[in-house]
Image (tube, rainbow, N blue to C red; front, side, top):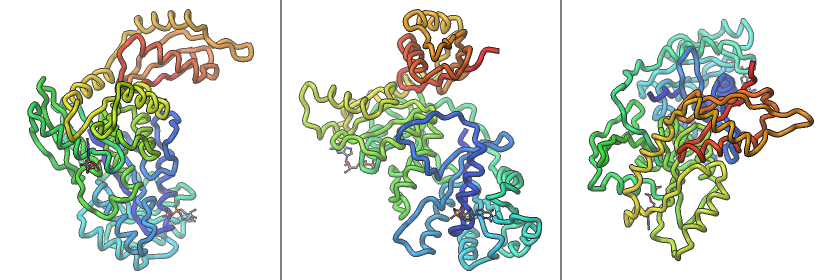
Length: 436
Ligand code: GDP
Ligand code: GDP
C-alpha cells in the first residue's frame, strides 16, 4: 500500500527544516551508506503509531531567481500536488504575517487536509499565545518547538488523524515498477513504446489522490504490471518541475511505491552525477533494479562496444553490481520486448526465500574457503545464518562480536549467497547479531 505523503509549508525561517529533521530523526529504517546519496534531504520516511508516511520539506526546493511570493507559491503548489496532509507552519513569535495569509488563501482553495502548527512556542506563555492563529481558519493550532522538541507528539497525532482510510487492494498481484532517470534520457519514449507493443494489453489507467497516473498492463504470459508515474513522464508543464530537487524528490516517491525500478541512462551521454543520486536511493530503499541503457541506436558500435560500456558502468556504480544491464532503443524498439520478462524475474528474486538448513551449508562452505578474519587477536566467529525478510532478501548472521564483522567479510558472504542462489537484480541485506 502506498504511504500517505505529508508536506510542510510555510514562509522562510518559520522552522520547516528544523521540524522536518526532528521528525526524520524518528525514522526506524536501517539504511546503509551509499556513495552518491545526498544528505541535504527534503524527503524522508517516518512512522508514528504504526502509521508509516513520507515527509517533504517544501522549503528545501528553492527557486533562486524568483520573487519571494512566487517561491512560496511554487512550494505550496508542490505540497498541494504531492501531499495527502499539509502541515502549515507559522511562527508564534511573529504572529500572522501577510505571507501567512497568502499561503492560507492558496490552501483554502486546494481543499486539502491542513494541520496548522505554531512553531517557536518554546515556553508555556508562548504555548498559550496561539489563539490569534485561529483567525487563519484551519481549526486548532498545534503549538510546537522545533528546537526544544516539544509538541511534536501532538503534531504527529494531528497529522495521522487526517490520513485517508485507504481500502487495501489485496487483489492487486501486479508488479509495481517505475522508470527513473534524468530528463531527456527517454523515459516517456520508453513508456509509450512499451505500452504500444502489440503483446501488451493496457487494462486501466487510474488517477490516485495525488493526481498521479498509474498505468496497468498485462503481458503475454498474463502477468499484470503497474507502471508508477514519475515526473518527466507526464510533462504537466508546471514551473517547478524543472528544478532538480523536485525531480529527485518525485523520483524518490515513485521508488518508494515500486517493487522494481528501471534506471534509465542515455547510452550516448553516459552516466551523470544526478543519475547516481537517484540510483543510490533505489538501492537504499531495497528495490529491484534494472539498468536500462537507452538510445542504443545512436551509439556507433563494434563487437566490443557493449562490453566496454558495461565495464565502465560497473566501475562507476559498484554498489549496483547485482543489477542486470540491458541495451535498448525506444526509437527502434530494440530489446524492449525483454523488459517485462526481466522485471518479472527480478521481482521473483526479490521474494526468494531460502531455508536455514541450506543457508548454513553455504555458510560452512564459505568459511572453509575464506576463514573469518582475525582482528587484533580476536577472531570473528559466525554461528548461524537465517533469512528474516524478503523484498529485499534480508539475512541475519549470528556472530560472537558484530564489531569484528567487517565490510569485506560481509561482502564476501553476500557474494557467496549470490553465487549459490539467483538474486539477480535485488539488493541483499545482511545484519550481524551477537549470539546470546
Ligand atoms: P525554514 O526556513 O522554515 O526551514 O526554517 P529553519 O528550520 O531553517 O529555522 C529558521 C531558524 O529558526 C533557525 O535559526 C532555527 O534554529 C530557528 N528555529 C527553528 N525552530 C525553532 C523553535 O522552535 N524555537 C526557536 N526559538 N527557534 C527555532
Ligand atoms: P524523458 O525526459 O526522459 O521522458 O525523455 P523523452 O522520452 O522525452 O526523450 C527525450 C528525447 O530523446 C526525445 O527527443 C526523444 O525523441 C529522444 N529519444 C528517446 N528515446 C530515444 C531512443 O531510443 N533513440 C533516439 N535516437 N532518441 C530517443
